[in-house]
Length: 432
Ligand SMILES: Nc1ncnc2c1ncn2[C@@H]1O[C@H](COP(=O)(O)OP(=O)(O)OP(=O)(O)O)[C@@H](O)[C@H]1O
Ligand SMILES: [Mg+2]
Image (cartoon, rainbow, N blue to C red):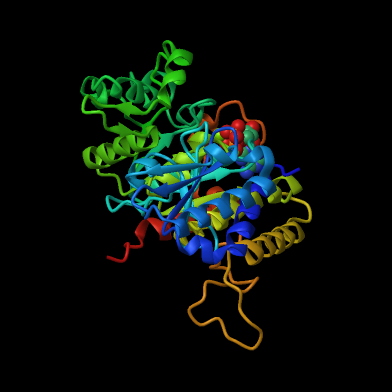
């Protein structure tokens, strides 16, 4: 009896065993439906002759006997379609390993699938702050980093995309200067083409910076209003009158483009949700991020979570598109035995990257152009930018008043590698 995880490996095995029959069918789509059942989609222009019929029958028979409940019954297993484009529309898809003519179309109940990586935006650098586990100091680090880049004269825009648990904006803005609207309002109004009326009122300038500027785009406005009712609608795709369809993450991307064009920040920093979650997926894969900071504690749960993600990127063939944008951040490095802790974190991160992300270097070859780094290479994506645990930040009631009294010395001591790394990213030009 097969289970979900065995379905695609079994399909691969069966197709490889019958590779000559498969070759007679041209391009093939393996459609996996919402319940996890597969069927074959073939072109309706295939010649209607004995050879094709026998190839189809052989594959259907083999798949049916090996997959049981995880495929459609033989008489319904094949669909003949005039256009593959229609089948592929709006669904995650990827090439089945080793079989370039076979595309898997995976129907998910969610809209995002972590495997559609948009190219980095050309409008300016976007940096995403992500962590597998919550409560690791991600939003605090973002607020401090925004402050410090602004002190260095930059115009920084900060987006609170932790919509289910917003908080970043309160770290940067006291209540009285919050804007009237936020990202949730824009996403809901956009469904009715009504964003013009709120667009100018969803950004506020933080009073924390003296030299540069911190522009804050909150999750909601000073009055959250019917926040739950709005939150339940933000993920909606937009279906236009002409029938065209825009995924919610594309809508979000459109908002970022508009914000960038209107406010011209030097850099945008995005606080997204922790965990393998819908919004996090959109932030990491769909918003054209130049850099994705992966916050990590040295815990089994962290490594397991990142491994699941990295394996998914490998399986769906997008790892090459995303790996150069990744950067590990070591969160809350303890005061006691801090150096040992950091070394172990680095070792675990390196093991993970070597197994899942870096190119294999055959013995005796040098790295050359391959994407691979030495364990102790400080410029490697796995090498954690260390943020120290500091009692002055533990359980503070208001990050805003804490950051109000921070100085550069303290920032460098606790958040040094992060702020220096971000400075470099925000100043490096994209190769054109
Ligand atoms: N460097 C630090 N040292 C000690 N405590 C910290 C540090 N950074 C943040 N904290 C504290 O840890 C707690 C969590 O911080 P924060 O809200 O920034 O984490 P988060 O990763 O954004 O959490 P969430 O996933 O809930 O959004 C807060 O009480 C904060 O004051
Ligand atoms: Mg947070």
